[in-house]
Length: 196
Length: 180
Image 1 (tube, rainbow over the protein chains, first blue to last red):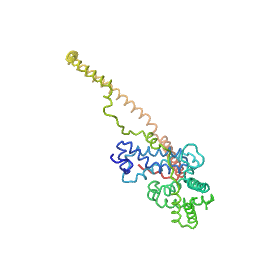
Image 2 (tube, each protein chain N blue to C red):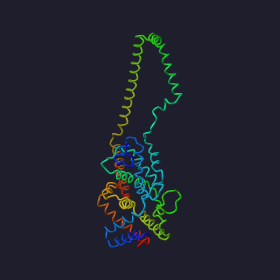
Image 3 (tube, chains in turn purple, cyan):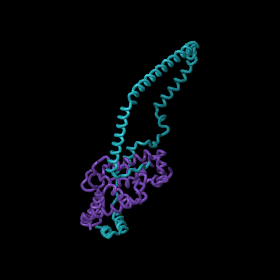
Image 4 (cartoon, each protein chain N blue to C red):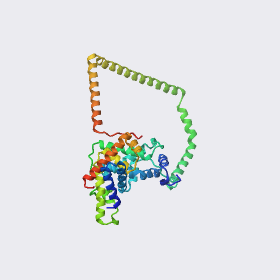
C-alpha cells in the first residue's frame, strides 16, 4: 500500500484487509469504532457490554469481509451487523442496565463528565449543561429499544432514512412514523423531567 | 448552560407542542450535535485484532534461519553425510535387488488381492444384514394404526412449532436483517 491507511477509501481498506494487511484492519476499526460503539452503548446502556458487543461486530465483519459488496456503504453494512448483534443480545433476555452516566469506576466514558468542557465556564452553567446531557441520555434510554435505535442512528449518527431502512429492514413509512413518535416521546420525557 | 443549547432545547420543545415537525427535527439535530459521541476505551482496535485472530501479514527477515551459526553448521554436516553415503549407494542397491524376485512379487500381489476380496465380502454381508434389519423394523410401522399414531405426532409437532413461532415473533417486534 503506497498511501497511508488513513488516506485510503473504505473499499481500498477492505481490499487491503482481504490481502492480509494488519494496518488495513486496524484502520477499519479506528474509522468505525466510535459510531458502532456509540450506537450499541445507547442501545444496551452499559459501557462494558457495549464494548464487548462492538468487538463482536468487528470480529463478525472481518470474518465475512469477502462477502462485503464494495458498491454499498461500508458504514451501513457495519451498522447492520451491529443491529443484528444488539438484537441477539437483547433477545437473550439480558436485563437492560442503567444509562451511561453517574458513578463509574471501570474507566469507561462517563457521558455526563465528557459532555462539555467545564473549564471555560462558571460551575453553575457547567452543572446545568451536564444535567441537560444526563436528561437527554436518560430520555433516550427510556425509549422503546426499536425507537432508541432509530433516534441514535438518525440524530446522533446522522444516518439517512434510506440507510436506516437498509439497516433495520423496516419499510420507509414505518421508519418515518417511528422516528416521529420517538421524537414526541423524547420531548414528553424531557418535559416530565422538568425541561421546558 | 450554553445559550445556543438552551435555545435549541426551547425551540425543540415548543415545536413539538405546536406540531411543527420540521422545526422540531432541526432543533433536535442541533441539540444532539452538542452531545459528544461515545467512544470505546483506549486500545480498542488492538483488542479487536487480538480477538479476531486473523492471519495478518508478519514480516520475517529472509536470512533469519541461515544467520544462525549453529544452523549453518548443521547444514554443512548434513551435506557432508549425504556426500559420504553416496559411496555406499551402489552396494546397498545391489543387496536390495538380491532379496527381491519375480515369484516373490507375484506371491505378495496374490495375497493382497485375496485379502481385499475377503474384506469386500464382509462389507457386503454387513450391508445385507442392515437391509434385513431395516425391512424388519419397517413392517410394523407400515400398519395403519402405527401410521395413524405417527401422523398424529407429526401434526402435534407442527402445531406446537407454529405456536412457539408465533409466541416468539409476537414478543419481539424486531426485524433481523442479514447483512451478508
